[in-house]
Image 1 (cartoon, one colour):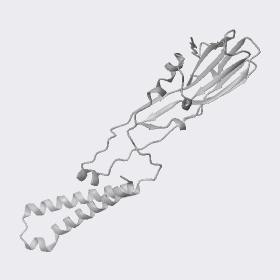
Image 2: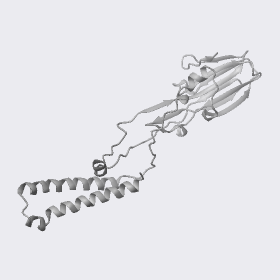
Image 3: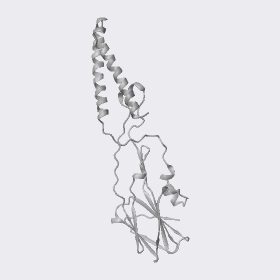
Image 4: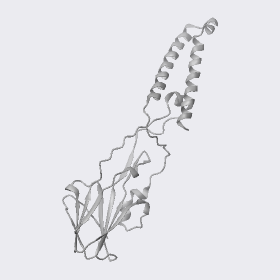
Length: 234
């Protein structure tokens, strides 16, 4: 149901309640012989209408922003198991691959460095293979982020990779912040339609970007083991 349709339904319900209250307060209904208890109920209903009015006003004053429709889509398990799949040398779909580069390597040593030796916001692994000679291959796989099953993976910044003279240096991705707010069916509508918000709180799932380095079999790979953990795929 589109937001405009919901707004129209809200207005129709609200106007209907207003006319009902006006009818209760009208002189015509008083001539019928209304009791004092009904009068008290009318005042209570009038106060309730005022609350509904404030709710409607607040809704229309809410700032406009980008809307995403919640579809209840299942999470991509293959994406969240990407690390395990790479460690098992499984074939990975191209949709997860962000970039693939090859660099010449004349030495028998490859050093992997992390910018400023800070805590890694990505994962690195390497594999020794007989398929390469005199070069290395670096693949960058995208990270995954879902919030209440909204896929925000394409917005995640990725680490940058620089290579020079046998040194592969990885720079941390830019700081990422995403603000989200949930809007449920407005109370004047949901209380009469029986519709309720399917979101109670929120949850999120994420996995870091992965840098997969392939090197010739006779190459030694080193790194600062105090700050970095780089497993070998065997």
